[in-house]
Image 1 (cartoon, rainbow, N blue to C red):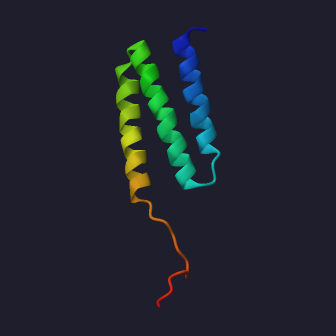
Image 2: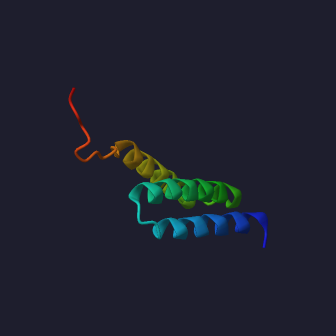
Length: 79
């Protein structure tokens, strides 16, 4: 197994692990990392579809992370 294959398997493992997450925030953070590694893998093997697809996925996950707002339930107090 060469270095590119190893990087691809690391990305695959991280991506699969992210899907087992119960938290949407954690899933998206791990997916961003996995897709970033997939982009590096795609660059190493010159696979344009992997680079493009994972770049779009990174942007979508980052957008959703940005749009997530902390939830507060009845903790707002006025003085």
